[in-house]
Image 1 (cartoon, rainbow, N blue to C red):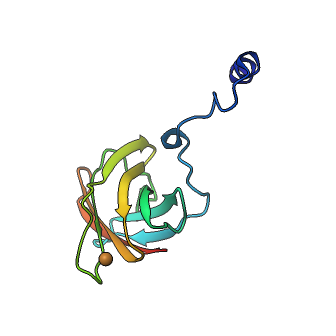
Image 2: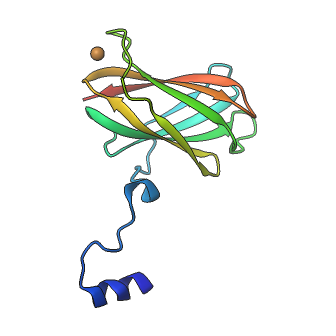
Amino acid sequence: MRCVAALALAGLLGACSAPESEVGGFPAEPYAILTSAAAELVLELRTAPDQPPTVGVSSVELRVERATSHEPVTGLAIDALPWMPAHDHGASVTPTVAESGGGTYVVERVSFYMPGTWELRLTFSGPVTDSAVATFDVR
Ligand SMILES: [Cu+2]
């Protein structure tokens, strides 16, 4: 409400739009749901700004829960490595991972810089030690 009033007074369009990273911009439907390699975790993945991802820099949201109890897992340290298996290369940009609470993590700066099949190789440590490989069909 305060935002709307400020907008009207200032007469500026877009002054109250939150940055992409706050809103997320992730679709409601997951791109994929995976079980981790050691079957400790279930991961829901969503991508932005496009789902499925397109060539360029994407963000990938991970919602992480325990496979057995379905409780969200907080406090994980997550390492994320983009990899293109067909060409045996990664990306020169290293993604960053931020925890946003409730078992949700956002991997940013995922550089899918050419079309084709990419992996996002995920390593989990902290409360759970496990790994997972998410596959994306990048167009
Ligand atoms: Cu390639």
